Amino acid sequence: MKKLSIIIPAYNEGATIHFILDKVKRTTLLNNIEKEIIIVNDCSKDNTEEAINSYISQNKDLNIQYFKHDVNKGKGAALHTGINKATGDYLIIQDADLEYNPEEYNLLLKPIIDDFADVVYGSRFMGGNAHRILFFWHTIGNKFLTTLSNMFSNLNLTDMETCYKVFKTDLIQNIKLNENRFGFEPEITAKISRIPKIRIYEVGISYYGRTYEEGKKIGWKDGFRALFCIVKYGFLKLN
Image (tube, rainbow, N blue to C red; front, side, top):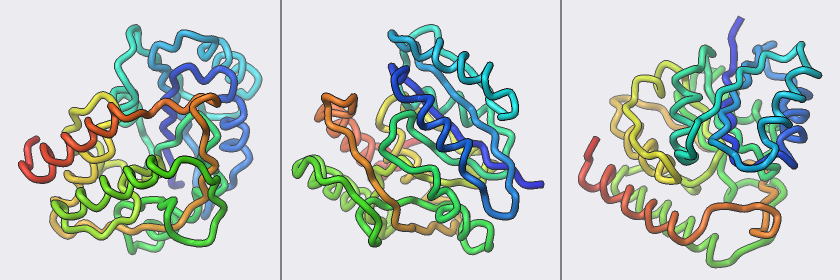
């Protein structure tokens, strides 16, 4: 039976992580695909660890693997840990907040299951699904970074910075990843674009964005790092 590894990086998400885990639990996958949930706690300063351990003890029927960093390393580093630990046939990235809906996993999985795709991106900027109206300049920044990334990768993505990306697990585990923080998105996009005969698809997804008061973490400094990574891995093609 096929298995999906769900990688959840967590930093100070004690207040919401049980909600997202409940949503993952309730989601039934196509073709009875099994779920492997891999949570990586990136040295949270709140009650994230207590919330995770409590959830695991109350949901022993779920396959949850829990790992933690002794020092804060960044979202990218948490993803590296989760990717290395994954044992599923497919792998998806799931933020620990409530901005993305696990009920849409099947939309992302279907092109891979039907053998059309090796990688699927979930785009917040295409399709007719619900989108919370938030920050104008944040949206402009996302589209600018996506366009610049496309110029170097020769892809026509609409949302390079999206959290929702599904990979064949062996594919992503064979890519050397360096970026420890929010540079993960442009780095992985540049590197998969160079794989011969790679098949990349994109599907429209919902987006329930958070305000900074609600816990959103990415800021303008991360945008500059993403710009640097697009040049480093896209234009200069460094490893």
